[in-house]
Length: 142
Image (cartoon, rainbow, N blue to C red; front, side, top):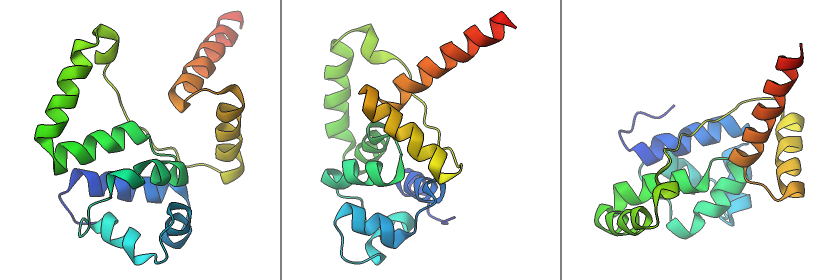
């Protein structure tokens, strides 16, 4: 783990650890030639470029919206306040509190979950909710 106080760097470090991938693998998937870029983002010495957040999320499995929110709150809070205000104006559905979980598990299981989400065209939270509903129905039958 890193000793930075940057919330975004901590989220990045947690995502890297939970992904089970090397920094070199993540750098390659993000289009960086050198793994030290990932190391600098992880330590807070370099800010993650906002336009690279989707690639980082795809490489690590972290929720891109949570990472974007963290980065914008830290790097450009005034801009985030404008975005958040417009989101609040969109209505109550936009105000549902969000949480981030990073799950460490066998790579084949995690990859199966990602594939299932892509196949059904569902986000990870949507698929997780469906699985929880199904698990609840199964336990009610028992």
